[in-house]
Length: 294
Image 1 (cartoon, rainbow, N blue to C red):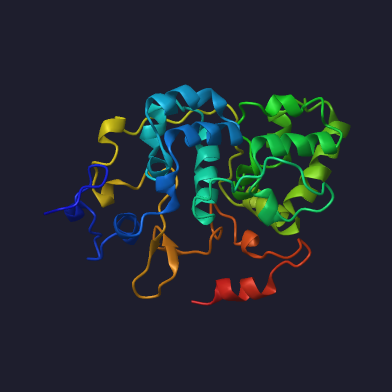
Image 2 (cartoon, rainbow, N blue to C red):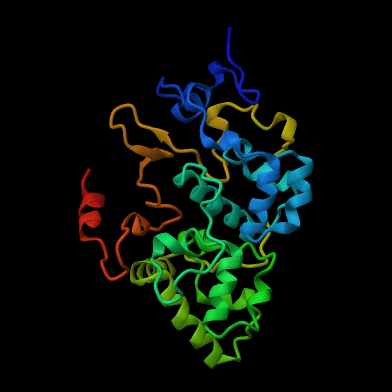
């Protein structure tokens, strides 16, 4: 007798290399904490990541913590999430949940010490916490503009195209206000740290770079309905909003789409700056070595 998980039979979970998808099996044998997060929690989570405008759709769809990790691009479109920026916001937020083992309280809502924060702390900032940071750097007048923007610490740190110009556009600070934009840029760079600054800069300088648009829409890739959300074979699931990490049987290392990774390594182009707990000044020599090894 086959086990059915959200419409998936075990026969559908086999990968092309003959191995069963370990992350899905883990749900069957060792349920993750995501199973403890109900749809009411998800609506509060949407508040935390700055996307409260989608609460009704997610609530009507009864999207819970377990469903979050299986959402695809088309599922989000079905839930009326059409903004490219908002797709990226949800993608980054789900990744932060994965890294924190779906700890329901992993996002930080309250300010701590305004003068000291590391990238590993910023990545867990809620939308409200980002607005508090804006107030602390004398941009209180613009902070309310981030409501409904989808901006949270995970998006700021993990999306390489998200930079101070993106933030300025979302805050509605016009290009003519050069001094204000310069002030924002200085504080934004201090926020993300030296390593992330460098990697965002390298991404911008790469061939074929196109800036992150705050108005671009996501095109529909196919049909989706939440009741049939899980009825697709593994090789048809390449459009996951946030690809599920599985374990490589040979190495035991965490991989996503065949690429070995640490919790935040290689996510949307950024190297594992957030696996280096210490201070931003300690740009990880050890990790750089580890990254270059086979």
